[in-house]
Amino acid sequence: MAEQKSYELFFIFSMNLNEEERENLIKKFCDLIKNDGEIEKIDKWGKRRLAYPIKKEHEGFYVLINFKSGSKVPAEITRIARITSGILRHLLAINKNEI
Image (tube, rainbow, N blue to C red; front, side, top):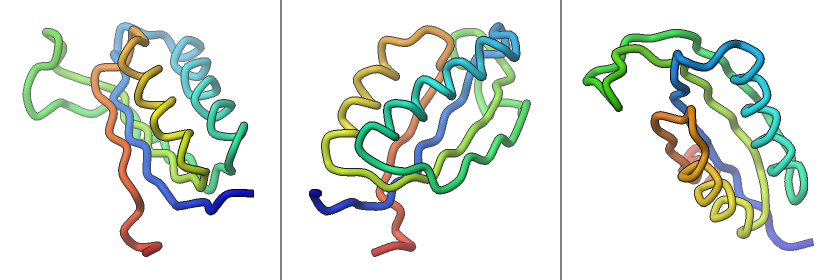
């Protein structure tokens, strides 16, 4: 198995999504991670006010996922997040605490 690194994946979901749609998106990305890695923690921050409007929305649902995976998973997550409706923003970074 290739070397795994620790990552943080942060999402801001649109408040136009209902709870089921949001949970399905979270599950979709978790399944993608599990193909070549493992989920360490999912932290749902909930509804928060945005610092500035994104796509004319003023609130979003925040979720942080900590995981370990091989090098191909982050690129695939980014590709899919960019084309998935309902995601206002995403950020994927190497967990600096693990280095």
